[in-house]
Amino acid sequence: MRKVDIINLGCSKNLVDSENLMTQLRSQGVTVRIDPERVQADLLLINTCGFIGDAKEESINTILQAIEARRSGRVREIRVMGCLVERHGYELQENIPEITHWYGVNDESKILADLGLKLNPEILNQRIHSTPGHYAYLKVSEGCDRNCSFCAIPMIRGKHHSKSIGELTAEASWLAAQGVKELILIAQDLTYYGLDIERKQLLPELVKQLEQIEGIEWIRLHYAYPAKFPMELLKVMRNSEKVCSYLDIPLQHIADPVLKAMNRGINSAETRKLIEKIRKEVPGVALRTTFLVGFPGERDEDFKQLLGFMSDYRFERVGAFAYSHEEGTLAGETLTDSIPDKVKQQRLKELMELQEDISLKFNKGLVGRTIPVIIDREEGGMIIGRTPYDSPEVDQEVMIGKNGREFVGGTIHPIIITDATEYDLYGSPIINAG
Image (cartoon, rainbow, N blue to C red; front, side):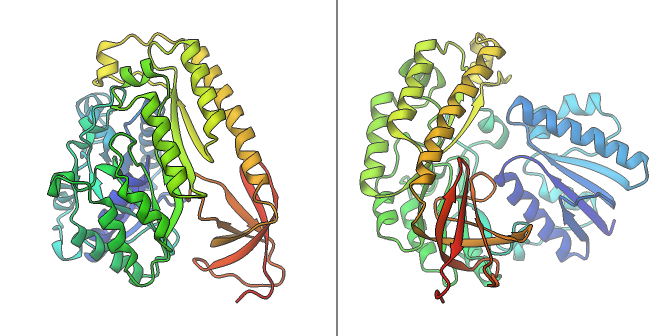
């Protein structure tokens, strides 16, 4: 099979897995595309997500659509890999007999072997990144040792396993040599990094090493767990010219009964103290967090406490989800999914309406300021970029009028913010800037 299309579903961590597989395939003469607008290949590989109900449904629908594509002759064969297979492989084989090859999350070698290829260890630190050439995700570890009661990640991805600093600096150096300017550090649990290697949190040291790599201009941190947060990291962020004043730190909730039932390892008072510490030590930091509403037993007063917390601490970026009762998780096995779906959706709507107001006020406060913006692309006659406070795919963008100037993707320019909405900024280049 000399032509392979990969459809990648789920998170950026899944995307890195797909990129690693792409690298191995291309190194052995296979033409491979990721997420093409129209699949047309000898082999279609679907990298699935199995985290929550909506993601599983999307993965199943994609598989069924692929079967239709095969019937129409656009694809000769379909194989399925990833988190959904790791979690529900037997059920999938029983219910979708049209697919004959299923692979879990750590089956890269098996996928290659079944295609008559071998894993090339010499290119493990190299990968063909499918994002725009100026930014790339750097997955620093695999798996998770936390025991959050709602989360299926440990059963899918296994125990936490950190890459060494040497491996990561080698991979980052290779990416920089390919033109990457922005590194986005990701993991199931970024702040746990290093505990399995040296029994101490090594994230601050890793970041300091990555700062030394020539060509890397921005470093962004995602998925920092709040419990036992490495405070030394704040000093690194404050003193660095490369680490963005941005931190993704999923909190999930603030009410103590819910945090306890979630098994988060941190209480309300400790959470508030941590957020205050981060804001004090890294002035101007933009905080992205995630909240989960409708968890079993979440009372009206718990939800109101969450809204009050948001109003008080005013997070710049918020993602939110309604609770999904997942089999195999502690909550799924021991708690009753007690909150009606209608109530979950109403709480989700109310939370996001509050965040819209917070986001709008934050964005309006940026109008008139000059902010460095990294250029991502041109679209509809506008230049599209991001501030240091915004990560690709999940955060807002800056729409920039060209004003007769040409912009190159990955370059960073001073942009004056001229207008703002809840989730978008508008700006103009500084004409005399270099």
